[in-house]
Image (cartoon, rainbow, N blue to C red):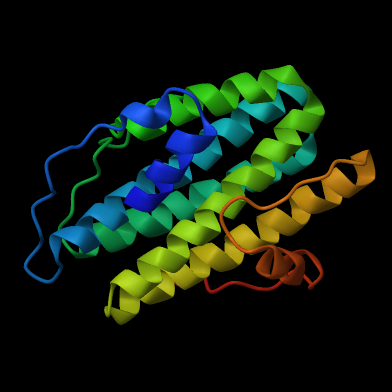
Length: 204
């Protein structure tokens, strides 16, 4: 997750001053890193929801609305697993658009929102970028933990992100928009967009 923030420091002006925060207190069952990643994932899923909700308001593209609804389910899945480990929601259920406790995500939302404002085409590229970023972060999260439940959650979220990526790719293709992945490899990106939508495990 921290690598994600470092990469964005290069891609977006202003993120070079990433702020460090105190390490979260580990639960009896989890390490501080596992707790930190779950909390980050909770807010990263909200980032996707907030950006897609905003993009739908701006352009009325149904795919943004549908994917935003899916992100709501992702958020609830993460929150349920966090609760099972006794980890509090950093946002205390606050659904205010663009509100985060992580300063890097707070800034990133502002930057992505500004890109969405530019055009429908840019909004679609932002959708692809978010899913590209999410898939990479979830892959790192899976490698970080040996907890089967956490790995299963991240696998399910990643499956959803791949489906979302396919939807945004279809929009991009229809509009003649090119996108090159910035987080996952080009070969992995091509494998995802050239494969069929899959059913994801939602038992969380």
